[in-house]
Image 1: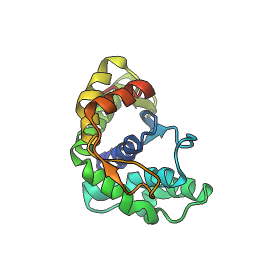
Image 2: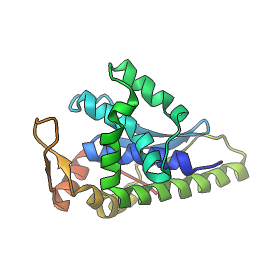
Image 3: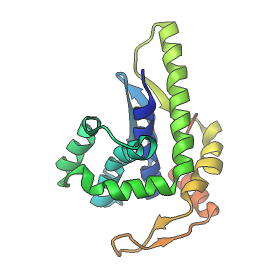
Image 4: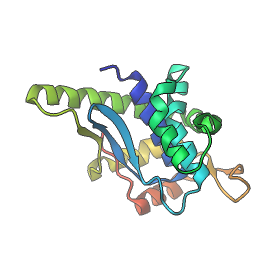
Length: 189
């Protein structure tokens, strides 16, 4: 199983989701494919934030590989279209900007996804299990890793205001930790 593209894709989704403050439930392998689970239709999110999140997968591929697989974004494009959005490429520049501005976080998350997928694949092949398993779950013991390592990368620039969310402001790590505590975003690697 080649994990370069899927790990870039899911890390891209996750970084964009965290940037916009989506509640990320986890990343899993389901029927042999990786997927990021988050509350896409949360009431406090705009359609544009949803569409940029969905474009985050190909943004991760673009950032990590220098190109993206247009066939690999069919599910994301379908979700955008179902919600009245335009072509996924319309939202790509915003998503790439978010991934690029959080490049270290993206790389770390991509690495963790890849390592965990390989570990779980090996475990499943040894035990004769199925090809669906959790990669990232809500293990509270590793939440500290998320708060101390990954979130600080995302703390530098956050959208504020109603001016098409273009205005940016620096957010302190304390504010990010508080937001993580409140939203109970838990990561286990």
